[in-house]
Image (cartoon, rainbow, N blue to C red; front, side, top):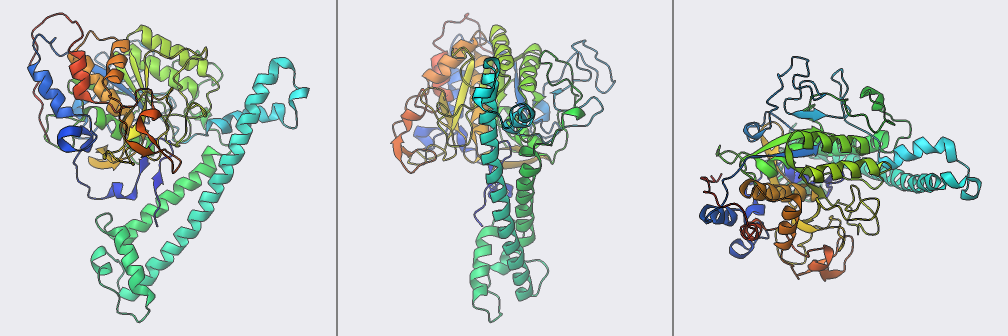
Length: 550
């Protein structure tokens, strides 16, 4: 009964409480000193911005969200969406001659020219194993030519990862099948005991009158599961059923050697220089997890701050450009590289990337796209991952270093932190590393936008990543001359080390929070603005910068 709905992205964890009538209080905006919550001090930062003398006039910027698309009609997002000023919607022509016809809100690299879309793909280890199995099955390193030994080692690593994860996915599915069957039987028993077709929390508060002594305990158990979260037991079991379907999808797609949706896209997968494929549909299906995920991330960065509705994003005077490149399963390196280039070429100065995987066979093409972004003055922000791993030992991609070992200068990698400054300050799921995770940011129960004008909390480094992207956007809007190197330096330098003893992710061991990242700290917008204001910039009159609360 304590199931957690784990995203198939691996970077977002949504509890079943996420779909309840939740408070829209956004703790990540709060101030650690005044509010006793480990937020980023958003309001203090805007108060400081309003009082700074000789600050440059704010300059609107574009922030790209590379994700699974998002709800372009959401009441809290539609005013902040990027619109391609040179493209005429739905005329079937490439009006601005950039190679992408009708790219009004952005582009979708996981769709076909006929309008169909890939929602599910294999995990990267599955793709590698399926591709190389015919070449290396039953072979040993000694029988492989020296020129092919590196590829053979990759094959063996992918095969091992695939076998381990496929077995775990099968076990999870079978275990959950038993749990689901038990839940459905219990719900049927309670229906019969109460003599009603629909059992809501009001009925569950009152023990059934049937003589069975187990029924009061059963009712009390399900009351705790339903109250304030679901309308009735049917809603609860429907949610459990959706979770079960996700586990089945992992077997059918993630770890299915014969599954291959790529022909739908119509590109040439081996041609890493190919740029122009896909379609302009960044919204796809609002029921798809990718759209839920992207909608949530976009809202954290820039949900409308002036409409007095729902939630408020971190950054004002921002337009969100959507690039859909992340399916359920694992993204392709080629798509990630093209998504970065597309965002850069269309004016993004910050790119939020809440995705990741543990194999990257074409990392070189992603590295080149990141170098291209750096040359064009673009900062990249990336989620560290949700597998409570030290990513120095188990590399998560896109990694913080190029293939040649050099640190990627315009990339910030972000772990997830929680609200309270105690042993649970670090999110139990967050990846970490004193070398390859730069900083932590709020990533537990962060409330944001959700498709169909809804709002829900989400947890994951997927949430922490857009928090940092939002912080970077505020800095870039208000201090336009800051380079990617400046932004990274300021964000990291302003995150003061926190020396709280915390439970190390994946263990029961207590460690110093400051040992889990390069900075040892949590991003703070107020401190970042204070530091940025000391950077020499041209003396011009600051424009008005009012911020409304919701």
